[in-house]
Length: 121
Image (tube, rainbow, N blue to C red):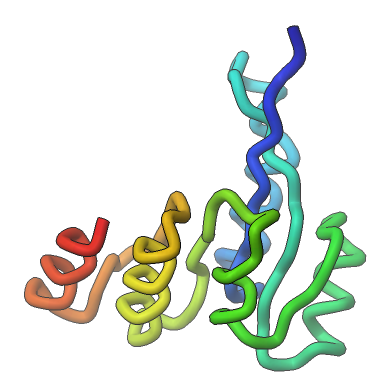
C-alpha cells in the first residue's frame, strides 16, 4: 500500500522555508513514513517572489493571504516559517481551522503567547 498524501501549506519562504522545503523533498530518503509530503501551496506577501519560490521547490500554488491558505480544504498542515512575531495569530487560526501545525522556533514571543497557542490546539 502506498503512502497517504499530507498536503502542506507553508507560510513564509525565507531561510527556514527553504530548509523545510528541502526536508519535505528528501524525508523519504531517510525514513519509511506512512505519509508523503505534498507541497500544495506557499504563502507570502509578494506574489512574484512566492511564485518563483513555488516553481523552484515544486509547490503547486501560491497564496498572498495566510488566512485564505488556512481556509483551504486541500491543506492538511500549516508550516509556519514567518518572522517570530507572526507565529501566534497564524498558529491559533490554523488550530481553530483543524489544521496540523508545524511552527518554526521560537514558538512565541513569550510564555503567555506560547500558552495561548497551546491552548488553541
